[in-house]
Length: 416
Image (cartoon, rainbow, N blue to C red; front, side, top):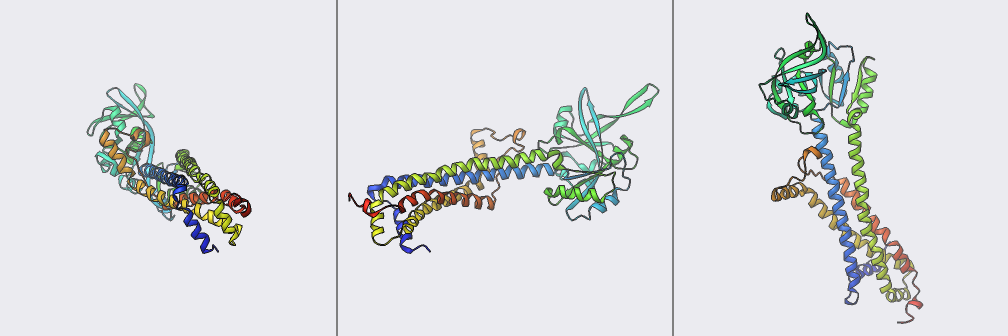
């Protein structure tokens, strides 16, 4: 139990008299340093959370979480396979696909692309591609129409707009009287999408109807596999393992972690590294308390001696200075939390205002995947930062408090 007088004395020592106002100023600097470190750390973590959320949102709005491929064996009864995988509670959507490689040619401009045959109504259950349409509609991919939907970047590279026609060449060949020629088909551009996620969907993917893809790639009435959407994308490995055990051996199950996992792991590592580096700022500010409290102890040695002669134990003296340091740390952490929350909630608006006022683009989607500064405040980040900063403040009081508790009344009052 902390005795009331130790708490009162500790509170009193936080208010300096005129003769030791310099010590109070140093204490104020330490307090503001802790507040600044906590505020910056909370804000940076919120911005990192915002980037992580936006990148995941953009990526999984188009990319499937899990892919079931049938290899060289075509799956003719894909409706049955959809019914089977939808029984898993983690799966929220499934759509068939027929895929292949192709080369798009338009007036001398050439670009390679992955051609994916889809069922538009089913595709809407596993992606938000229909909401990313810049022009045209995904529903235009009807059977036997040979329509094509491509990304904005690919359309710009080939000089295409909705209504234009483009030749699609495939690796398959056709035997003609003139010899063996590559198989190709003329498609009409019926839609252009803009995912703006930086993962190459806008520049390297072309969507057509799955029945048109079946004829183009000579896959009969079968599909190459299924794309799956999950309630929790981080359960992809678990779902993949379950499906690999349940499905026949010729099915091959992959997920997003195998192709893009290293990128998202790098994002997570970057957040951890930023947390550790910025935590050093908080550490430097909190350990300024050491010098502040040492100065206070040296200034208060006569008072400590008097308290000892009045019956205060070394432990009581130690508590007094721990309380003083804890109060400084608590106020600094509190101010930092308030500032960090306010700055995190308004970071996007502040950066947008700076960009608008100075007519500059600080955040470019070509580099950062988004064209604004996202921020997402997490309660656990605030709690962790505040607890660590306060614990560091308490640790910083240990040495000065021990030094004060070892004060001998006779030596301290010898020259008074």
